[in-house]
Image (cartoon, rainbow, N blue to C red; front, side, top):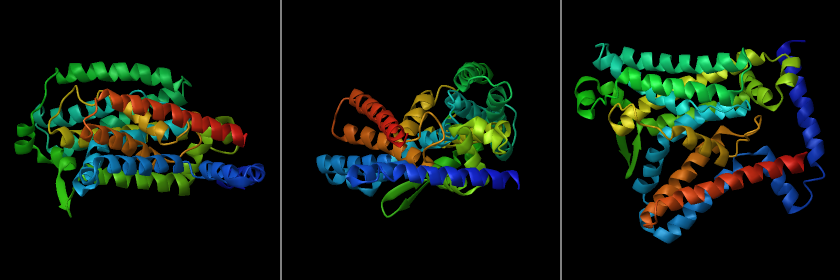
Amino acid sequence: MSQSDSYDDVVKTRREESFAEFEDHRKGFIGKFHHALHVTPALVPLIVLVASIIIFGLLIGDRFFSPFSLTLILQQVQIVGIVAAAQSLIILTAGIDLSVGAITVFSSVVMGQFVFRYGLPPTFAVMGGLVFGTLCGALNGLLVSRMKLPPFIVTLGTWQIILASNYLYSRNETIRAQEISSEAPLLHLMGAKFNVGGAVFTVGVCFMILLVFVLAWVLRYTAWGRHVYAVGDDPEAAQLSGVNVKRTLLSVYMLSGLICAFAGWALIGRIGSVSPTSAYEANIESITAVVIGGISLFGGRGSILGTLFGALIVGVFTLGLRLLGADAQWTYFFIGVLIIAAVAVDQWIRKVSA
């Protein structure tokens, strides 16, 4: 029997055991609702997203429900959504990556500097930025998988290293939008807009949505995706089942770094310039989107679609409160409440399913 077959048998056995455990709990509405949350982790953030859209729509009126306003939310969360997709992969393995924001901004700086300092063609500059992001992820992955250092400590350290290197390399210089538009328009590709019936989309928004759906399919229907969940759930059991835990972790961190580099490219299109001080809140915002999206911080459970819903929830609250004329601090207040509520729901699901 192959290693893959062995692992599939283990997964099938666990599913059968899980199904048996939930037989008693599914009696009554609460039991059925809990079971639905257990098998569909993205259901809670989806419900919250729909409810928040309806509430703000009723309070604000047609301005909020206009195609322009709804697609404006997508534009506002595109960077966070892409970075959160990278963060989701790490958290699914029971890790956390504090360096995603630094990798994002440094990758954008590399793309800009390759063109304007070294005179490389924009295509090579973009490729260089993507390779750089992947290498940063590989560094994190090697330290976590090979040296078995805690992900929090590793990425806390690399966050500081990458951030400081970013400032030193860029000399704190910003490459202006006018220069990019005239000499390297490819760097602005992710920010290109197109109109569909009054709704304004960008290439970056389309990339974010496509990325999330591709990752969702990969995590659900491929052996690599099952290995990611297995490592996050119980790395020792996964190892005994034939999963190469070290290789899986390394691949996850490398892919995360690559996705952050794409976020850096989208960042240039979003703000128009290459700034070494941009995206400074991406670390916290990505974790916020992941937690509100229902992915367990303990690893092994959750859906990357939920992360997209989590990012959109933040965007809905931000735009909705702004249109209501509320103080910006109320956004942080309500997002904090949602974070605590999301963790409480995760604990409740785990407790009842135990």
